[in-house]
Image (cartoon, rainbow, N blue to C red; front, side):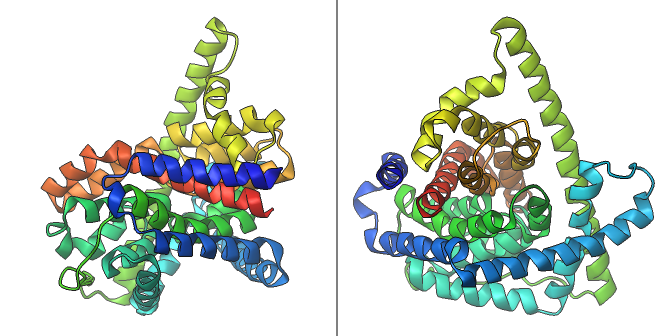
Length: 393
């Protein structure tokens, strides 16, 4: 039965993307089918094979070591602020971002990450039927972050037509930055975090290929990556450490605001209607949870977590899922977990359009105008990934 529901779910997701397509006649189905098959193969390997378990175990252990190292730095500065066996979200989850960001800076300085990003992007461009720039941007977004990635393609921003700009922004919203992956693994099972990152990479291209189909000519398909200004090792290290701290503080501030606002709205709804705002959202999103493979009796709770991510952000939803207040089976938890691993939420519209506007004002206004369509597509990417995982586990 789960396979029938899952297949219907895939058809619905692709159908919703097709309804919003800007050029239905020119959708290229061959690369879409190829990428869907790759998603199933990679998802199955990561979740259901010994090789996948070994890979994810290695990645999880690696991040565990890194988080322990980060903990040494955090404890040196903030030790004693939290009692033994007590948990502080900011100290335990967000501050390690500073250390991971520092490591990214070191790999950038040594030219290791630029090499990896460039050549993975070139390989992807052969698979997805899109341009080298789009493929580079999708991989770079996962390394640099959804706003910082646009700095690396600054020279080309002003030259891009609307349809190519949409794909770049969609990739940035559908992926997540490596600097916060360790923080996700504190709240979710690592195997679902890793699987979602891999599947979202292809899912972003699939949904964009349906919503926003186009062909890039060889003349247009030129990849010019903005090089960083020449800096010493310690300049780069200091810059990335400060960037990581800014991300931690910004995410923390957003969490304070969003959690407080949701609590206020819940109080209002319970006082007037007798149900929480998240319960109402759960009813609205429950059909999508069901099509993703969540059992019918768990759809309301699962959908409330999904909706929380959309209206707030993924950290608020992950914290809700891991808090114990939402009771889901192991399979449903896995499906919902993969849905949560992306930047698809309303606040990301402002972050991405603001990042582009800071580099090119006119293009930033273009991004703001298609912001809701961007969020629509990125949300479908998350639903697609979760539906495939629901068919696999």
